[in-house]
Length: 467
Image (tube, rainbow, N blue to C red; front, side, top):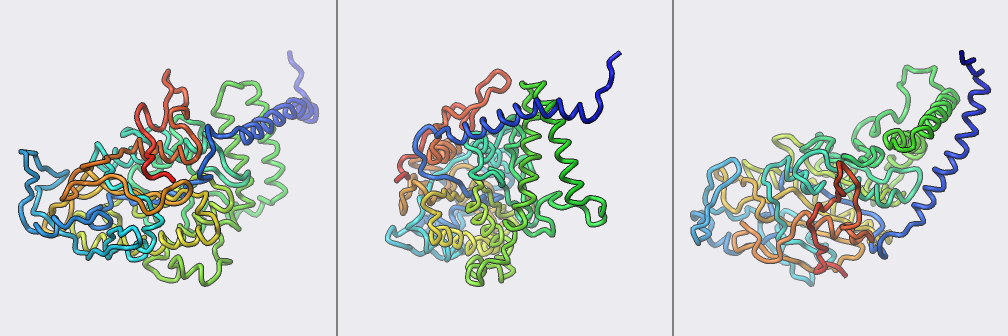
C-alpha cells in the first residue's frame, strides 16, 4: 500500500519538477520570440475591419457609368449568359442612390456614402475584383476569415497568433471586437482557433458592455474572493496543471489551457487600463465620433483597436454589423436607406483610425485591411434593394508594405463579375501573411494526416499592391 505524501512534501517534490518545466516554458517563449519570420516583415500587426453582410461595391467604391446610363433597363450581359440571384428574381439595373466624385491625386471614385474615407484614397490600395465561390453568408464569411467554406478551420487571426505570437506578454495575440448589436454570422466560430491549440482563438471584447471581458473581476457578491485568496488558489492550480502537463508532453490541450489561464491572469492586470478610453483627449474622442450616437459604437471599437495595437496585440478584428436580418450590410430591401445607415456608422471611425495611426507613427508598421464576405448585384431586388453577389466585391489594404493610391483588378461594366485581375480570399490571405514576413506555403499545422494551412493549396501574393 502506498503511503500518502504530506501536502508539504507533495508540493516540494512538485516544485522540483515545475522548475524545469517553467524554465523550459520560458526558454521556448524566448526561442520563439527570437525566431525571425521567413523574411523581413513590412508590418508588425494587422487591424481587420470586416463589413458583415456583404457591403455593396457598386454603391461605395466601384463606379460604373454604364450602370447609371442603363438604370431601369433589363439586365442582359450578352453572350447568352444566365442571370440569377441568391434569394430573388433579378430586377432591372439599379444605379446607386449616392453620387460619385473623384478624390485625391489618384482620382479614385468614391460615393457620397463615404465622405471621410474618400479623403484617404491616396493611402489605400484597392482590390477592385475580389471574388467568392459562395454567395451565402455562412460559407462566404468562413472563406474570408479562415480560407475554407466549412466550419472547424482556424481563422486568419489564429494562424497569425500561432505563427508569430503576441508582441507583449500581457495581451493576447488575437482580439475580436464584435458589433455592439451582436456576434457576426457564424457566431464565435468567426474567431476560432479550429484545430490549432486553443490559446490561439480570438479573445472577444464586448466594447460597449459593462464588463467588456468575461470574468475580468469576481462577482460583486463574492466577498470571500480576495486578491490574496485568488493568488494562492491560482498558484496551486498552476502547479498542479504543470505537473500534469509534464507527465503528458504530447497532449497540447492542457498546455494551451495553461497558456490561456496564465494570459488571463496577466490580462486581468492590464485590461482595466487598456479598455478605459476616458483618458483619451477630447479631440481624439471627437475624431472617432464617440460623442455622436450613430458613430459611437464602431468608433469606440476602432479606438480600442488602436490602443490594442499600441500595446502589442498582433491581430485585431473589428466587426461592423451583426448576424441578424437587419443592422448590417445585408441590404436586400432599400440600399439607399440601409447601406446609408451602415456607412455613416463606419465611415468616420474607420477614417479616424487611419488618421490616428498615421499621426502616432503606427501606420508604417500596421496593416489595416477592409473587407466583406461578398458584394451586391447591379440589378434590383424588390425595387430598391440588392441581392448577394460573389462575382465581384471590393477590399482595400493600407499601411505597412502597401503601395498607396493604387488599384488592382476591375469588374465588368456593370459591377456584376470580375473582368481583369480577379483575386480570391486565398490571395488576400497570402498577401496578409507576406506583409507580416510569412510565406503562406510554409505556415502549416499537421491535422488528420494533412499539413493544413490558411490558404489551403491555393493563393498568390498580390504584388501589384505592394510597395
